[in-house]
Length: 558
Image: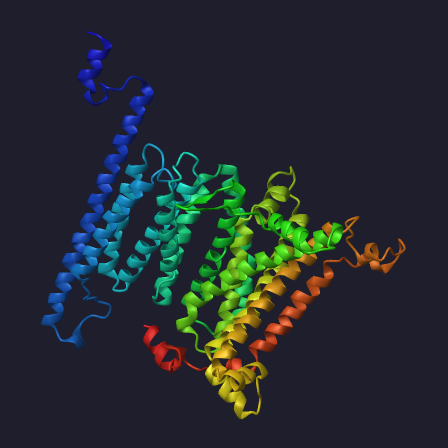
């Protein structure tokens, strides 16, 4: 009897395998399938048990007086609509994942479909169980479904742009951009803070999984370590500014996650530039350009007499102002979309705007390979002996100084935005005190435009210009020593002081550091403790109507 005949008789399922590797792969696949079926049966048994317990509790509730019922007994049964939505969403997300397998890690490779099926079956069953056990679970099931759906859509568009083998069809690209814009807006939908935070958290979860599993183990360790280290100063900053005004934790988490996602536009544009991606449409195409290169062309072609060193300085300043403009607009947009319905005072807007800035700085520190990840590799992983002094120095400099720049610029913008939200009440109070705003008063007398309308526009412009200036000027001052001849590092180098002069002990970076850290704290403290900022005014429900804050919190604290 041949070996092949013996193999067919003893192991029919392995007869088609041509080598031991195939046999092992088939055995592994069979074990995974068996494990999946056993897990599904266990979860199904728990679901049926929960349903039966719910029915029995419901019957017992009707047969017993409510006062004699046991404390802690639940009589909640989810609706068939909620269960049907969960099942349909699970099937739909799995079907969508089949279209994007290969781009969403870990649902890639030969076993991507089986891994996706296992994950979504278990997630769907656990969601059903949670809805029987906890009445509010349906909100979080909805949030997880929305966050996952948006993640898959955005990952699909990412694959279409950045995978070389994908076809750059103009129709698909235009449709993809429309879907991306709609998905991005849908992430910040009109839901309660807990649901919004869960939606954004789900999206960030999928993004984190994709990034981590796409990297080599050594890179993954460096990123995880950098993330944990960057989270420490972020939490400290949040706790520091949380003392100024009490907030619900769900709002704080929502704003922090929103701030993290506000880094997406600038990072996405940077990827387009680095990969030289052209956005092709039917009649035209858009080619993203490097800010520095475009600014340099503008300065050299339009500003007569600005050449040499002056051209370099002007180009750098304008480039940083453009980057600051994009970042501040992005933070303002997520602040408005995430929190406008929940602000009851100017202090709320100021404080939660600062939380958005902290979230932005945290994501920037983690995602940019030149920051915390570079510090971890340069001072902890690559050297034979970890250089803790240099590592802590770089981390503290980045965590304190650059975080404060984001906090100060976005805080000033958020304060001005708060004035626009409560413009009517603020103007009325200031009119009673005899204070007149010159620009709104002028336009009202000359063109009969309502003062409140002009005041709102004025505050938004003032806030945006202030934020962009603070942001761009700091980046310029930090970069300035590298642009000047000789790369001076101290005031002594600038003024050509004698070798023993005390000016050589004053670093150039100390000047922006003192202004942004010390001066920033002073400016924000003044804004926080202004009487008009501390006053609770209720929440905005329309252009001119306010709801009392006690009514609002009674409604949403449930």
